[in-house]
Length: 323
Ligand code: BDR
Ligand code: CA
Figure 1: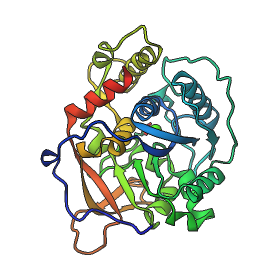
Figure 2 (figure 1 turned 135 degrees about the horizontal axis):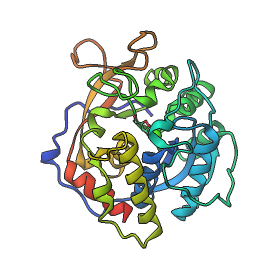
Figure 3 (figure 1 turned 90 degrees about the vertical axis):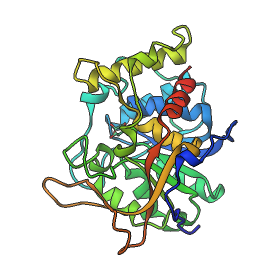
Figure 4 (figure 1 turned 180 degrees about the horizontal axis):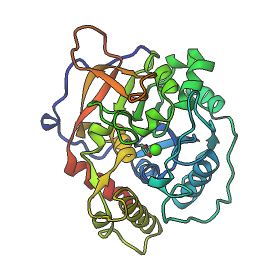
């Protein structure tokens, strides 16, 4: 399948939300992670999840996998979970317990899962799934290690992937883990480089977008505490807000990974522009930074970058999924 990127910026004001949404079949690669957990709740409501793969990221792989299994049980999601990479292709292994808590879900402590991973070979699962189900879209919510390994070990699979929507990077060059780099890209820049240089149709949902979709405890307060999924979402939102806001919890926090899911399920709420995006692999201050070429004159676009979102509708859609 050839890379197709949109020619023009789409104006979200000109687009009407369509309802009800078709549930698009997706694979989800994730590192739960508080906002990954919220994203799985959103994906469970609005997409048809065909499988989940885990990657080391916010916390080590044993925790991200355990959390994925527990979340599937909470959400009654009967989908295969395949464990993936335990560390990056290059550079140091970085984690983010200061944002997600020691085991990855803040103060949410779910029961130990009774189900088990289907395999510990996410790459083989992804390859086989795409070959059997060409055109399936992948939503990548963590470091791009599994995706890069897939493309490196099975280059022909690129033709079968319907597209990859990833949460990572930023269009404006500022970061959250360093001044210049966003966590998912910083955690494995070499992997991002492989993915960005592939022929797969890519969509980037970066910090420039996710910092517009802000939620917190006050949104959780509107959910039904007696429902186990809503109750878990309330705890996740509380934990996230308090951890990110350094204990103060006074400001709302970005819905990074849920926004990437909505960019697939509620595409009409987002405005994308075609851009050439590279990742910096070297700089002492800039390793892991996504460099988005705004000139549009010199290099052909290699992905669509999300710039605009109908914020109120996005928050309403997330809240509705958490209810
Ligand atoms: C991204 O990094 C992780 O901490 C979050 O889960 C999200 O995927 C935001 O930079
Ligand atoms: Ca994540």
